[in-house]
Image (cartoon, rainbow, N blue to C red; front, side, top):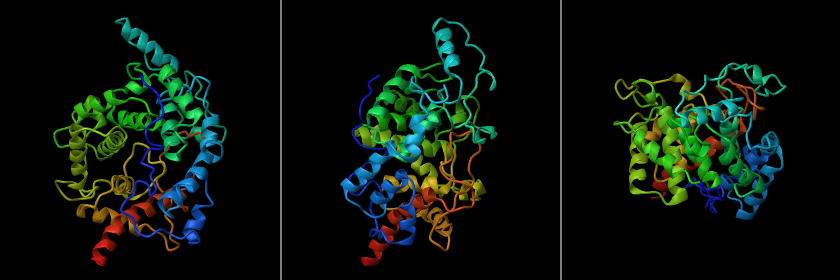
Length: 381
């Protein structure tokens, strides 16, 4: 497996203006909401400078470099074990020995061992009590790497390049014991693996090809399709097209992958991002609540952010979803944290639900800045 620095310096292209184009006029740094955003973590600040106020590349890079050494990024990096893993597992805590035993058993033609019980090995739950929450634990290697990519720790930093080599060498999936960057059977996990690999400069082309084979006739994907008949899923489809877009921009892409991604986009657009194609009804009212981190789950802000990052003139079928993002803006110009997904975490980026969220405010503002540029252009014409 080739491991090296990626062509770009982040999960999105990082040119002068960033990935969200076209864009309306930059916000002023003395805007009250911008001032509040810039009082946050370095991971927030560098993205505000790039995506909202159009700071210089030098200013953005200087602020971004701080993510490795200060705040949330530094805290997560300090929790990495010497072998490159977090919480001693790929997707679930305390599963490293099980994954290795599974790999050895399958290589020898023997049945894999039983999955360890949650109490078989301590997961190193944080002392603040967050580890007591029910639900999917978010403390293992895969989830932390996804967080670090979103925070924007520079991928060419020595610590992330060392992490990439260690994970490549030491981390295996609980499913079939495959090496981390080879992916596994779940298309949502594979989508995240591609995003991580692209960020770190790792060759994940075989995982891309696996996702291509997993696409369903209606253009979407579903991570349950391996185990039971199921229609395509909004959540799975969004994660996959996001990963394919990142891979295309990193490698130059291919006609086949581009076509598959566009078909996945069409799956969501035909449903206006949240409505049943058959009945026109809202599929899940919770999709109107914006969580962060969204993890593998789906909501309208996460979906709208994908189309903003993709760029191009907004499709008219996005209008209703964008309108719902807009209406969630509070009178003070901020968006709230909502619907935090339960599960153990090393620490929370923001809390509690119902309070102003810098993450959701940043994300919503850059979506609207991209979307409204088209309307402004039309008015000017």
